[in-house]
Amino acid sequence: MSNETGRMLLLDKPDGDLILHEFPLPDPAPGTVLARIELCGICGTDMHTWHAPQEAVFGVEYPISLGHEISAVITALGKDAKTDSVGKPIKKGDRIGLIPAIHCGQCYFCKIAKTPEKCTSWISYGTWAKADQEPHFTAGYSDYIYLSHPNSYFLKSDTTAERTAFLEPMAVVVHGLLHANIQPGDTVVVNGAGPIGLLTVAASKIAGASRVIATDKYNRTRLDLAREMGADLTMCHLDIPEEKDRKEFVYDNSFNLVGADVVINAVGVAAAFKESLGFVRDSGTMVEVGNFVDSGTIPFNPCKDLLERGIKIIGSFDNEALHFVRSMPLIADPRLPIEKLISHRVPLGAVPDVLTAIQKNEKYEGKEMVKVMMDPSMPEK
Image (tube, rainbow, N blue to C red):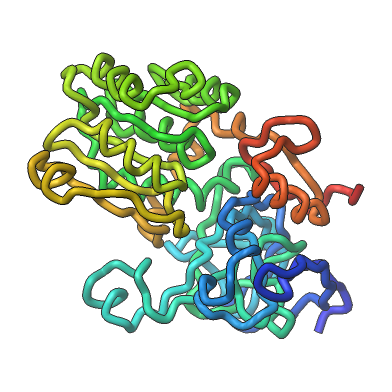
């Protein structure tokens, strides 16, 4: 066992306290990898996990580790750990991006349906049960990440730490885009200009959308970023407060004048899902990404809202290895100015305060948050 130690933030119980612990660094077992965290994106999902009842966090045993948007540098390799998960040679000092979910590879969804994101026995670097016990270092709000599970999946990265930390959210975006099947000439509406929405704007243009309209309820800073990410038009609820007028704006600015060919909802409230249905043209496609946690219900008429309109409604949940592999060239693409989404860099000890600001929809340190990156090398305040 190494004499060195590292810090790790653990959630002690549902809606409990995020407590900083210190553990000895492991000597990597055969086939495993120990890496030093460079950056970890602070995600709203972790805020929901923090304050969720235990049954909403898949019944895992506490304490749990959090943080899943990870860029890290390899510091030690176990025997026979020679390549990343697609066969690229690795060595100490190499940067890697991590796929948090670990799928069993044996259940119906992994082997037959080929949708491993629905794995019935999955675990995750990011909601690891009993994280105060070995192997420790099982998530991104930490000094290190220890890839100890034999089904761990990680990719060597040749781009910057900042871009690599966007690999996981970009994989969420790619999953949605594969469902969306964007075609040349399409008008695409991205509802919501948070980090996922902003990445979706950029990736939609790369995927071939001819016009992208980005919306946000009130955050003009994010809509300014949406234009930098490639949005052709933006729409703010502050400027167009009535839903019927926002629908008219989308129709008037779609190439076909009958609505968007594709709508991707990246807002995590049920009302935004309902409004997104109004933006899509008849026979178009609506992809739901935003309501990753239960935000309630809406009135829905299967005849009028779906059947008569002939639209496709697709739920895009989480991501899997395929989406990470497809995301790696996107996060490295210089046409996508994704570093501009980083609004703050904070030390490890600031994570609870940032998550609280996300929960309260507040600014952090007087500045609008877009994507906050945790940098464990920063001195604590």
